[in-house]
Length: 363
Image 1: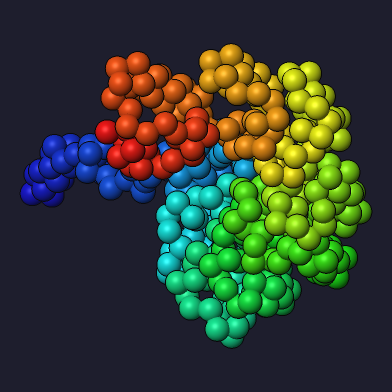
Image 2: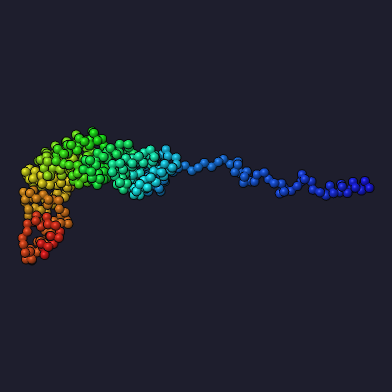
């Protein structure tokens, strides 16, 4: 009996699989292959902030602008500050094109603190009585200056100089971005005082020509020298033409002025004639040598005018030869030859007429 039981137990033990030989699939793994790889591989570092691409894609700078600006922002490691600045400017109402222009001119504005720098500047300008809409117009025109703590003082000074006109300030600043950045005491005040002595008010300057607002930020010594050169041309200080000559001569080298005067004498004008031309139309000095020569050739050879007559009417040099002088001359010539001209007009009179008046007079 005992032997029989021993045999059955032994038989069952031999038939049962040993736990140590259990199939691998039934043993729950501690780590899957995927988990194992993830724990043994080195961690992937985040992609570095691409400043140049950010400037191109987000700020709409050109590739060339982005490359240049990125060199000043190489220390940026994330878009956190730039994003905050762009959002602030957009909320202020600065146009997209204005933001692009501001960033292109002053890339470091993207590093400014909205809370500590930009927002206080806007508040200070608002305290001067400027609306958010006006501030939004001014900000893109004041790169670098927009971030300085003395901005409101500078804006206040120039508003006063322009008799409170924001439009004059905006126009002047758009033509000379250095206005709000120049020294008030060392540059602005002396220059404004001197121009006033010359009969030129600050309100006149933005409309004299597109370069004239740069006179505000000239070195005072250079401004005085320009006035002296204008007087050397025979144009009296404070005269009606002085401001126009001043706004022109200030941007010309002394040698260039002398060269144009020499040209006028070479083509047939006496020294007295030249003085008359410069007093009446100093802008002739701005014309190219070729244009002066061609106009003189036409006026003397075709139109039959002499030098003293032209000198008394130097505006003839300012009219376009191709679009005004030649067409009118030949039209009148044809009408005269066919006997269709009811009145005989001087050439200067017909050249000076506005287009509609000329058409009416020649019918």
